[in-house]
Every structure is written in C-alpha cells, then in structure tokens.
Length: 377
Ligand SMILES: *Cc1c(COP(=O)(O)O)cnc(C)c1O
Image 1 (cartoon, helix red, strand yellow):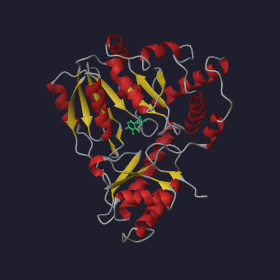
Image 2 (spheres, protein in one colour; image 1 turned 60 degrees about the vertical axis):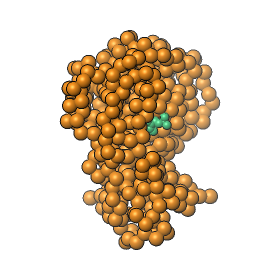
Image 3 (cartoon, helix red, strand yellow; image 1 turned 90 degrees about the horizontal axis):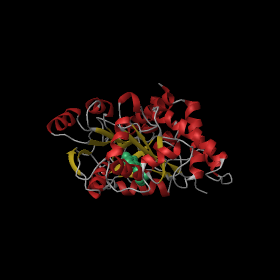
Image 4 (tube, helix red, strand yellow; image 1 turned 135 degrees about the vertical axis):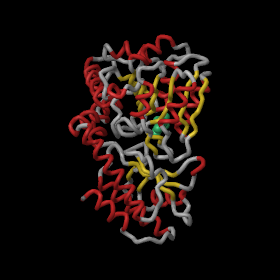
C-alpha cells in the first residue's frame, strides 16, 4: 500500500486531469474530433515555447527531437560546436558523430556552467554551422546562460540549437525574443506527461537550414511535419492519447500562466537548495543551479546509491543518483512539472530519515525547517 512519489528529473508525476483525459476511448487521428484537439495543442505549444512559429511534434522520447535537430538542419561534414558539461552534452556530440557532423567540444567541468566568454572566443576563432547546448544539463543540475549565448549567435550564420528537455516550461526560454534557432523538449519532464512525445521549435534561420540539409532522415522530418500540421494532422499516426493528455496539460499551464509556473519552480529550487545546505550537504552546482533539479554531494560516509535505493524502497520517494564520474556520489531532486511545495518538504523529510538511517549525523528537521522558511518568507 506504499504511496510512491516521483521527484526524479524525468519522468515526473502526471496530473489527475491529464490521466483522466488519457483514459478516454481512443479517437481516430484523421477525424475532425482529433484534428480539433491537435489544432488547439498547436496553439498551446506556441504559448509554452513562447513563439509565433509552429512547434513540431514527434512520437518519440526527447532524444528523437535532438536527433531530428541535427539531421534536419545540418549537412555531412559541417563543423559544429558542442558544449560538453555532462551526459546530455555528450549526447549532442554522439548524435553529430553518428551522422558525420564534425563536432568540436567546449569541455566544461561537471557541476559548472559554460562561460559565455569561452563560447564567444570559440565562435570567433572558427566558423561554426551550429552551437549545440543544454538549457539544463540534467546530469549535473546546471543551468547554462542561454540568453547570453543567444546574443552571440543572433544575426550570425551559426544556428543556436538548444536541448530544452528540462528547460521548456520550467524557466524562461522565450524562443522568439531571445533568438534561439531550434529548441527541443520531451513530454515526461515539465510537460507532466508519460514519456513518448518530443517537440521542436524552429526559427526562420533554422527552417532555411532545413532546405539545404543533406543528412539522411525519414520519420524525423521537420518539413514534412510542418506541412501536415497546417492541416491539423501529423505525417504518421500520432501518439493520440499523449496528445490528448497534452491538451489538458496546456490548459493547466494557461490557467496558471507561464510566469507563475516559472516563479514557483524557482522558489521550489531555492527551498531545495537551502534545505540541503541546512542539512550539511554540499551543493554539486552552487554557482549556476537549475530551476529544474538540484544536485548535492552525499555525505562522505554515505553511499549515494544507497540513499537513492533506501529513500525509494523504504519511504516511497524516487530521486535520482549520479551518472558516470559522479555515480554513487551525488543525489538529484527534481522540482518541475506537477510538483508542489509540500512534495518538496515531504521529500526533504524522507531524505532526512534516509540519511539518519544510513548513519549521517545532523539535526533532524533542519532541512524541512529551512524549506518552510524559504516558502514562508
Ligand atoms: C531527459 C532529457 C533528455 C531526453 O531524454 P529521453 O530519455 O530521450 O527522453 C534530453 N536532454 C535532457 C537535458 C534531459 O534531461
């Protein structure tokens, strides 16, 4: 009878409203009933992405949209620049490699954000077709300075391609205003849905690049989807129930407003950071923390993997551990999507219990008290 709560940076909890809608009998994707839903979803996605342009929808995980970003805008042998600050930055580099795109990397220490001056210097030294980056590098809980980087690429030949999988719907990434060229996300993070939908917004510059791109592609074809969306259809069978769920999620975002969602996420992020510090934990990314998730070093005497296992198995809270070089050394707690203040407070309480069980000495209740102070003050 254990109640389970997801505080993982994907998947995130799905609101009851969306679950109920998705449980309704299936619609045919070429019938008017579904086309009406898709039409409203198209408009809603423009609101979420803060763009006037079309947002392309694929039935895939977020990585599908990342791959599509590369295969639709680039050419074989293109030179691109990839910010490598964790697992997802490496994914950009791997996708480029798979398609014969030459990727230079900016290596960033895990837990740090890329320096704008370093990006500027690299862009000056060589002509790059694209710069690929994460809005949040989820593996390290770092938020990169996308706004400042967009100022470097705006009006140049270089496309700014942003993996916003834990950014869109979490904190401001106004696509048109900042001059981002390609922004992708997936359904299972801030969009509060099960995994299975991927999205991409494109600027005019990006659409022009699509005309010239010669990389192989079939299913993940932006131009083909753009044409179909104009008729409230997708080229192939869409993930109908997820799009119906998205219809509901968009309503929730509009009722709440993006501004309020962003402000609340920032507040929950701050409360989480402050609570962890009050418990004596060291933040993993203190200089440039993300509003999507927070990472902290586990105490030296405690195995991070044990924390993640115990808090889930005994207390019912799913959090994430570290990957690769920080495996077993950090914990990550997400605070995006359908997460409320009291989920954070309860999650911190569960973490306090877990760490106490594992022999870490600190004042019980110190994290919860600090989180409440941040929310209350
Ligand atoms: C979750 C995530 C992805 C997408 O991963 P999928 O498993 O393919 O959905 C991509 N980038 C970032 C930054 C993420 O957090």
